[in-house]
View (cartoon, rainbow over the protein chains, first blue to last red):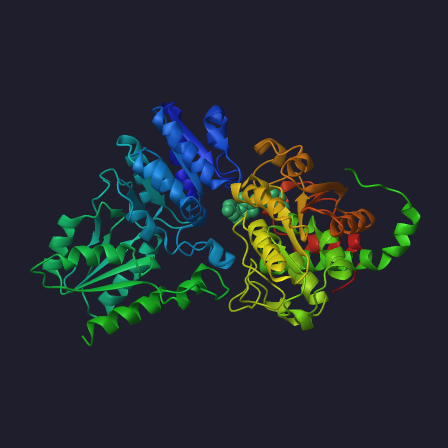
Amino acid sequence: MRNAFADEITQIAKDDPSVVLLSGDIGNRLFDNYKESNPERFVNCGVAEANMVTMGSGLAMTGMKPVVYTIASFLIYRAFEQIRVDVSYHDAAVLLVGVGGGLSYASNGSTHHSLEDIALMRSLPNMQVICAGDPLEVRAATKAFFKNPKPTYLRIGKKGEAPVHGKALDEFEVGKSICLKRGESVALLATGNILPNCSSVSDELEERGISSSLYSFHSVKPLDEKCLEQIFIEHEYVVTVEEHSRKGGFGSAVAEWFSSQAKTKARLFTIGTPDQFLLYTGNQESARKVCRLDKAGLLEQITHFIGPA
Amino acid sequence: MIASTDHPQKTEREFEPLLAVAARIRGRIIQLSHQARTPHLGSSLSFVELLVYLYWNFLEISPSQVKSPDRDRFILSKGHGITTLYAVLAERGFFSPELFEGYAQEGSPLPEHPSPHCVPGIEAATGSLGHGLSISTGIALASKMNGIPFSVVSLLSDGECNEGSTWEAALLAPVHKLNNLIAIVDFNKWQATGRSTEVTALEPLEEKFEAFGWNSLRIDGHDFRQIKSALETAKDSDKPFAIIADTIKGKGIKTMEDDNNWHYRIPTKEEVDSAFAELGIESL
Ligand SMILES: Cc1ncc(C[n+]2csc(CCOP(=O)(O)OP(=O)(O)O)c2C)c(N)n1
């Protein structure tokens, strides 16, 4: 996903001289093409995330279009007050890009995990929160920011993720979910980099005779409430899935909306990581296993929720 | 202040055992990076002599004292250099070298960044840069408040001197007369994506600490004699003490020295073998 982002921002900056890319001393070589075509509009801000975010706000105040890029955990946790005051409160159109969302940096330990970032960011007024599910969503979300610049958190994975969507998402809109598959009994609502797992879970459910729909809810905020209404009418069960704590994330956003609905037929189940630091050493795949976010773990949780077929 | 540089011959003999230890530690670091395919090799190689001197000749910490209230504290603020600390702790008997077999793999008690929940001898979770000096300041303050004397040594990277929190701690420590606090900057002149002196206006670094109310000394961070004299000076200091250690990222292996590709690169089997030959070690 980070390569998709680097490529997209390089293209955009070629045509828009107001783009400025700030990086927190990460992404070695990643931005070589950008730097080559736009050397004056790239600043390595060093290992100093708080300052970098607020500088972004300052740039936005002059009408420039700043993009702040670093590892999600350091971007959101280290600089949260700067994000709240200098970006949100000022309604400053800064694109905050967090690379390594969720458990992408699992093997680096809890300092590098971002399992509470969605919760923090969606609580901020004025802030849009977008979690990209594949490289095509990264590209589309990056483009969307420049079409309508607003304070935005774009949470992406790391590298090597295969595309889930078949083609470029020309219709992509912030706040509008994408339906990848239409089924009957269960609706799977995924946000962010767990999307591919949900896609294979949906296929497996099919084989077990359980018909499921699959949606990418890339926008956690604004939430596609219109689509939720439809989903809750059309299905018996709705399951949200995210590589993030169950507390406060996408599932919570859906549950908040759900709690205000008088007449919904479907039952809601939210899947995410448990309310504890993951002390288990291992890569993303094994961390997902431990958190029951791998295919088998997801299937187990979902089938347990819906009961015997 | 610049450290004095006399008696080179005497140095050789006095520090011969430590030189051998340092070579072994380097071998271990390179082996770990290779077997687990973990980055930050250059970062780990640049502070080997500093850590070896600290754990063999300076810090009052041992496996039997890991919980004693008056032990000296060492905080590896640049947590991504963890393999050096693991190698040193194992060599000093804090845990069995057998644990290295599964380093950073599924279920290993040795994760890729320090965690207080893993093996004995790790005081704090670092890896998010810019925490170590603040943690150390808190611990040093507690030592003063409780009248339990011990030293707190914090090892920082030059990249961490970008972080505001580092300088917030630096501003506060002198006010509380924390002369039990020693900050060592592993000044290897590189950070992840650029020269540290070009990313921010880091120099003159020792003068910055002095301007903030610290005593400071600039040394060659690979020279045991200079490390020894700096730490002895620090111990008698009336203020918190900063040791600015000029080091070389990737030190010890010619093809890795001062080549920042080794921030991320993983050595091949052949590169491990030739590194071992260069270090003069056969096995670990
Ligand atoms: C707060 C924070 N921001 C970013 C990172 C990602 N990161 C890991 S190492 C590094 C910089 C490495 O340079 P330096 O700190 O000077 O140490 P060296 O490897 O050169 O010894 C960065 C930016 C981090 N670990 N923590």
